Length: 228
Image (cartoon, rainbow, N blue to C red; front, side):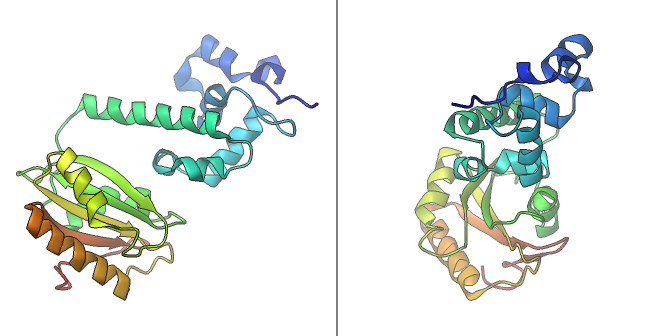
């Protein structure tokens, strides 16, 4: 039975672990850092090759951070063990960034919200439905991906959106999803989901301030279109 190719099987001069020890983590590429996290490849490819293929599937670290367990395990060579390790590392980096703080992001307009999410969402190959939870000063207190897949009312259930909003003690919520086609024009389904979320928010006392659709370097605000 063929064994997975481990880091120790990589030529010594090319081993990322040794390079980290000798030169420090800052001198390693994203591929090398991923190889250290993954530890082993498959029977057909080295861990360095697997890391490169993972970075090809998720071209930016933002996309890798937003990837779900199902998306990660759909990559050949990434089983649940490797996927959960990656998810844990990405969550820790996110929490570290929150700890470091800095000036909070304030959403004063649809443009502010679009700038906050545009870079990480404009090239996504699947639709991602993301919620920005805001406090009474319109500071973003949390950003959470609620689901990944084609938008429809049965999947984007208000229960999931407002359950997370209440957990985050949010005063309001701003929803965002992308159109992989690059065209942000709203579909009838987009409009129906928006109206449903807005109505539920009024009942629960958590305002839906907007629903943005992100395209390629462009966006549409459903509030500005009069659907909220």
